[in-house]
Amino acid sequence: MLFHWTTGSLGTADGRCLPYLRLVRFLLPLAVTMVIAGLMPQFLSGGIARGPRPTETLAAFALAWGIADLLASPMSQVRQLGLVLVSNRYQARQVLGFVVACGFVLASVLGGLALTPAGHFVVDDLHNASPELSRVVRYALMLLIPYPLLQAVERYAEGLLMRVRRTEIVSVAMLCNIGVSLLVVLVVVGTGLVQDTPILLPLLVTYTGIGTNLLVLGAGVRRYVHPRLQDGSISGGDEANLDFLYLGRFFWPLALTMAFQGMSRPLINLFISRGFHGEQALAALAVVYSLAHLPYGWMNELRSLPSVFQEYGKAGLRRIRRFAVACGALSFALMVIAFWLPPVRDMVLLELLALPPELAQRCHTPLMLFSFFPLTVAPRGYLQGIALRERRTAALAPSAPARIGAILAILLFVPLSWMHGATLGVAALLNGFIIEAVVMWWFVHGRRPVLPEVAGQA
Image 1 (cartoon, rainbow, N blue to C red):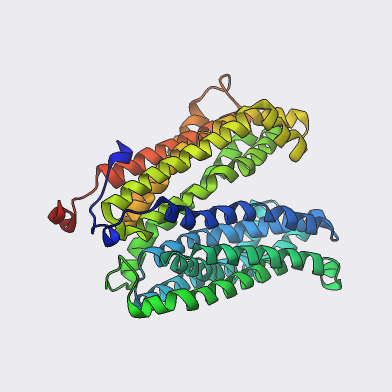
Image 2: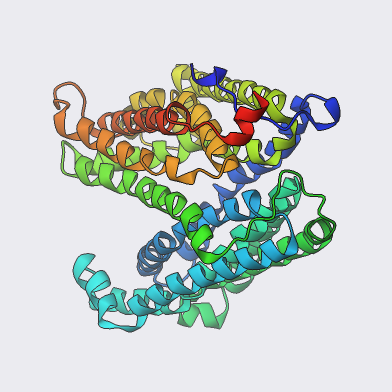
């Protein structure tokens, strides 16, 4: 029974139970920001489309950004270092040194792709890009070299702010990022600089947005985090020496999990593109991925709750489990209303998104399957949070390869006469999510060691 499991506690905070309202106040800014941020790429694409050579620019930036974002993806887990490990200024400096070192390594790899023959192989040969497109892509990669480092520092600052429960600062920083990015699109799209070199538009938008985000996050860290690091008022911390070896052992399973998760959709796209009506199936998948992720993607932040509210002990964990169940049920209900009821579904697909009727029809069953994803994401987020709280991130490592194996099993062995196209792709992804949650439950809960401090309190 997944949601009946509890871990050891330090007792409730001041004898009080964890209020559900406090959980809502922590999670709501992150959820709202994630939904709004999901709409930003549409505005950027619109700005590029209004400039010269829009097709070339869109293709070049999509390719360059895909490579840069893939290399920087492990840095998205840096947030957990600040959230879980840092309790004083010395530890903050140790983690920052590790974060900067990792960012420099990934930036160096990206620089190698931009400035060495390896880039020609990846861009020209592997992606079969034309010489002109390849030139623009490698120019964009050269300007994106600092991105992994900036991404690492940005995520670390977010983790520190979440550690002291100031998620509204993280939300404000992202909203300022989006606002400044939109302003830059409007201001520079008609300038001579962008008219001469169109690829500079998305790059300028990217860096002004990141710069704004870092400024707001930095001010928040200075105002809310530094004083608490100095006076030692952060709950649940210890005085462990966070050397590079310790940080590496904590971080590598998180980075590995993110890398494997990033492979899921490209793997599905590869199989689906070679099946019946591959182009139409890929178009349907593109629609349902972005649309269905909005109602449940925010639940990934449930992983932060056990560490942030650990001073509430067993009672707090019970509240967090119930809250996770409620979040999963709410998201499931919203997706059933939006994707199962024909009037609502047709309004979204045909009126709001203005899809052709044939393409909208291909989205029906995949969207219905997507409505079950919250029922796996909720327990997965809770289990990830327990592993982070107990600093047993190695227990998370087997779940991501299991997810890939489960996806491959559906893609390879389900007869096409049963399902095909986008339906097959979403069914494979759903199977991957289910197996990932089961494997995570086994390694985080089923094989959980009895910790001495927990045994002593039992």
